[in-house]
Length: 448
Image (cartoon, rainbow, N blue to C red; front, top):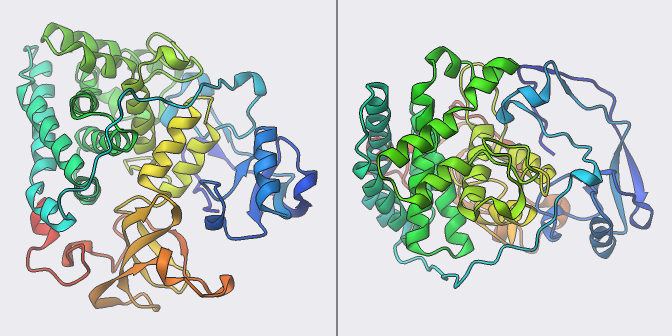
């Protein structure tokens, strides 16, 4: 399992040991930290999880004879009241009470569309190279208009949302690659862009049609515009607000939704903005609605907004790795987020999403360029260093799902862990995504 870094507002306690337990003797509440077989050969979406139900136990029994469980594990505690802190500043409470769990049937999309890839990744990268910058510019103009007390012109946002939707429909990996590798100092604009891309990838996976996807993307791009009417000093300390400040911070959702209504934005887009901070168990805001009373597009927006907030570095905040963030979402299934939606997100983006810097078990380092929904722990990696972590002259592609075929489990090549953005010696901009050194440099494409 990934080890979570200490973050502001947390105190750590130590004292974790592992115990081998027969699968037949497992109990609800135990934390399963290892299996008697490789994780990627089981249906469990993450490495390490709490047993929440008898269904979890039955699934473990069907695949394992024994597992390793954490014993006397002490959890971290926040130095301020969880109810008064923004959700992205909280770690999930691993011990969930049964009465806190809200179960819903699996999501059923009416007339789902089976989207097919119609353009190669390299071609789509070229076609969509300017979209991240155009999206951020469009959002920035809307925010600027609001700060000057003007009715914002939302047409550029709608246009870029349609273009983003079309790109993700043609190939879901290209825009995600561009957005994740784009460096941008302004957190709000970059966060909105990446949230919209995550939402489109998940929505495409669910089979939403193009019109719904465009509505979803537009709502995600505009979800945070209400913050333009909040004091900037408040926004600079979003991750460490006291209870009174947090109450003021929460108003940004309704402020943004009302401004969009005044500007004549479609009801579907306004609903995404108004509902992106609602939570499955009713603990969200502004209305505190729960379960299927939250529209599906709002549930998607809320989930990916939370995920993006966990993995994005910003001043005073140590981000989680994508694998750690997925683990936290898995803990929150049927509590803050619908279980089926969490699992669909994991299937659509993988444990190690495109653009994640990783180190392999042989010491080589690289960046994830694609993944297989059936082998979530075995992505395709563009390796950029040798085993001594010295930069290679030409990167090469390693498909972990296929390169381990025929190898003993103990000798398999796997992802050892995630690396922070900007790790020395890892410059994806030198190469195109096929692995060769590139004449059309990615750094030139994304303008960094």
